[in-house]
Length: 156
Image 1: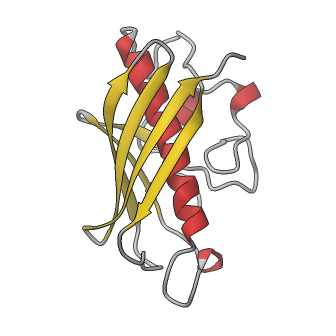
Image 2: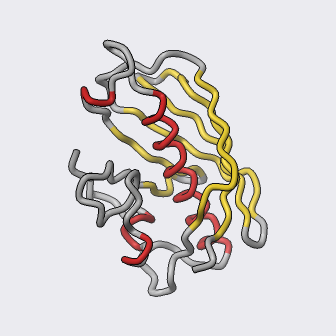
């Protein structure tokens, strides 16, 4: 899937050193290239799984969903820390890079293979280095997954 470049995503601004993640790394030639942005007070990531992401016929593999939530949440955490410090995407200040400390994924319904998936995140808490992100994954307008991630700013 080629990324939608019609908007600024936090992953577009990570330094090259930390842009190799299989889920969201823009420099990983075989990765998913998940892209996370602000959507009002929420964060948003969209992705359309491919047939190779099948768990059982017609449904998405749960590991892909966990990866999508993980990258969405660390991107959301970076956006929250950057905004907390008075910055918006496109400014020359370096973007923080976050890592997952805790990932909880609740699969509420089977996720159909075919439609675009949308992850909407809410920043629940912002600390000095820690951000808590709560997310919902939608397929065809229905919440199929809810998740919570504790992300911490990486010390590189």
